[in-house]
Length: 234
Image 1 (tube, rainbow, N blue to C red):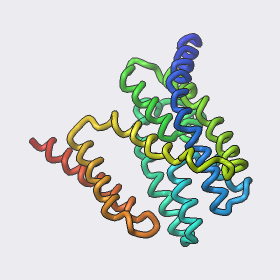
Image 2: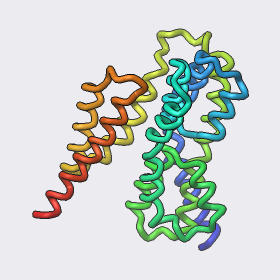
Image 3: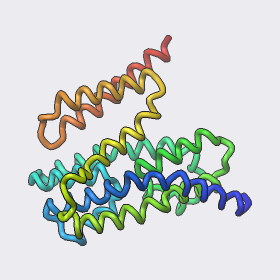
Image 4: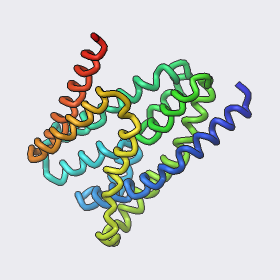
């Protein structure tokens, strides 16, 4: 694979990943604020962001910590929220599986919603890309996002309490997932899974420890799988 091709793939990834800064900045700021208000010290907040690198799971865990939930509940909830990473990994394996182990390890560390969304869309649109080119594209997409996640978490932890409430940083959470999910609703099974999970999440919103979210997620996947099975049987 010529170096110029890898360089152009990297620059393309950089270009396509950069717009996600509009989401990452308020998302990371908000996590820094929430984690600090939950009682975590600055090293704990930064350790959480650097080691875990999973925004939604981090928010769920911090919320449960603030509610003094049992450690087992916190861990199980974070794992359940992060189960989507297993699906992301399985989805990227056909494209990146032949890459060296160290490269796959770095991809795994930097795998989160935004890098997955931009990389998977690119790989599907350009199936002729080689493995080295795909890795370069992925690295380009992650380059602006990871340092920003760390840096803005630090800013949120240090000065978050001085940010006026009218800034409403929590808008970043729903926007992140709407931007990712909407383009993926390409079949009736996808729509049924998304619709049923949203409906059930609202129905079970009052359950403690975010149990309603987990029930809705599992039920949504079951509905989508059943719709797909029935359509395939026709």
